[in-house]
Length: 168
View 1 (cartoon, rainbow, N blue to C red):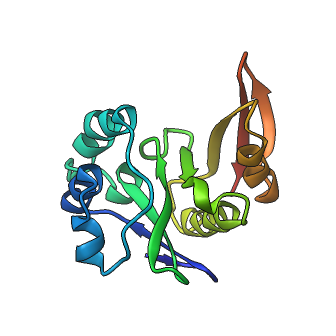
View 2 (cartoon, helix red, strand yellow):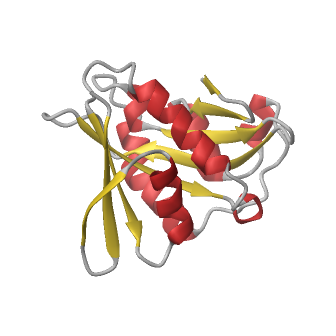
View 3 (tube, rainbow, N blue to C red):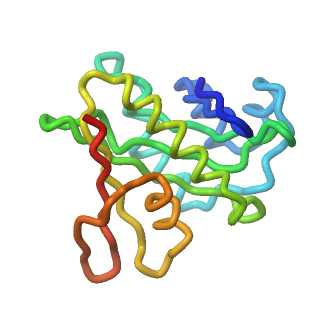
């Protein structure tokens, strides 16, 4: 677990991830948390089931890079968002992150703090040398999170900006 000033970042086990996907309160009950306000969309549920859940079962991989991390706001003792890696660091040591904040908790600096916490953790991983992220061009809050954490814009496509942070 990663502990920041206002947050806890918790990587989910395979069983916890299945409970997260079920979105029926069993994860919160297990962790002693208040119920989360967000419902998982069918598209998100499908992505979690098809991509992250199978990867979280492969014992040959670093679990922390293949599961979902929930972001817990200490003051409400509840999940307010999540983040994940798009697999383990590649052969150049680059790892990609993605993140989302529940709507009621946006624009309060929580994701900036969460990303700062995960950066600090990634710096302890010997095989990681940089972090990559992409953001929609129409989502200035998302790229503000990266800019505040010293990511540099390194490119763009039709609807996306690409960002990178060197950590070594």
